[in-house]
Length: 260
Length: 267
Ligand SMILES: Nc1ncnc2c1ncn2[C@@H]1O[C@H](COP(=O)(O)OP(=O)(O)OP(=O)(O)O)[C@@H](O)[C@H]1O
Ligand SMILES: [Mg+2]
Image (cartoon, rainbow over all chains, first blue to last red):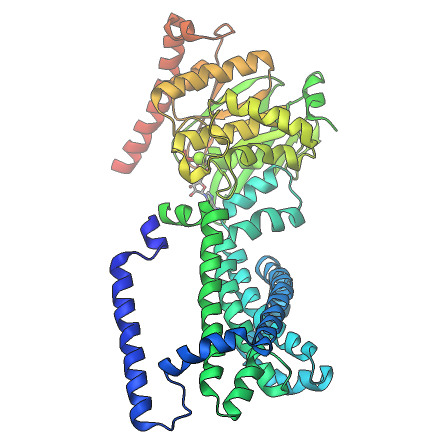
């Protein structure tokens, strides 16, 4: 694979820009023509942007939500990695846990909300629990796949140099499953974000989700939409960050894939 | 424990294989192999592709279970023993580690302290001619360079037994010659027991104290030829008439078998 495939180049940028412009224009026209005046339009959002970005409530909500997502992701990373390595490398753990983990992965995280809000109350802890639940299993499922797919050659070398099983797990299996791990992490980040917002909708604790909910209810849709855009931007940004980190810190990963 | 200590001991690295049979399901790879390799001896193992050379090395390193008995220095091998290092046919480099970290891997696993690792690794990288590539990843290197990196990793733990599976198969002819004499020089300085798999008869005769021919189906040790060429061996060895004689002998041996196989196929 070449660098061109990693960075967006001109020919792919142009259609993207045209499509974006077309969507914005169409949106503006349709809303102006057919919808009530409080419905968000691109122009309205642009006008609201400076005010909202300077609004202390908005900034605090952003910090709270993104902080909770980051915290939840770190916890999910630890849980998901350990679970995934266990299931991927231990037959006993695989037999015991695989179906439960797959089930938890498939269950929409929204269904746990009523439960966790009973256990933790309408607090940040309920949101954190939802994020962890939503994010852990996509990491676990992917890491387990990666751990199963580790070439035997690597493990044989480790064994030959008298590595213990535990050390091989973290020094061989984990780095060799890095591509799967990253795929899981990307999924997890998206799911964590959704979980945070949905938890805020449900429990009405402060955060970006609540900011959107509140502003929609008081018919300030343009303000609400600034938060929506920010969440979208966060998703794109996180992906770009993972991409950058991969290129910077795991230079072997894409190349090695491309060669063999 | 210090790895260097092992080599200092007299007679370390004596390999004894008794009645070894390896089966994969219905396939018997080899049966009733008896092989003794004395300490500091170099045994070159040759034989047609698929006859079980790699399998035999794996068994000796305790990586594969088999029927029969293997012991190194009187200790029965059930798992990879201390002081035994393998140069893998498939290189076995870790793609996420640089040359430096790949070479350091065995030392780290042996619990060698960081200062000693920092002292030893550059030496062995230099020994195989990879100085300047310490920070390179395997994907950035040619097959031959990767193979040399695998060689450095095995040499770095200063083993008393070196099991080498076609260690020069992926390098070009010139590099191969350089490495052959380099390895001989390393051996002169610090003789270790070596089992050396190769497809090159010349290489087998040049390196080995004995050339062991593994063949047949299932394979067995067909010939065990003493190579009584004087050491230290060097480029001159290649022009020794005795060298040519021994090379012809090993060659005739392998050819006979190949003809027999052809005849059986034709019949
Ligand atoms: N894991 C395995 N399962 C089943 N059969 C195997 C396995 N590994 C090796 N074999 C078989 O054992 C035989 C010997 O294989 P081995 O790799 O030892 O041959 P080799 O002499 O090293 O060949 P080459 O010179 O091509 O490297 C082959 O017929 C191979 O198909
Ligand atoms: Mg082989």
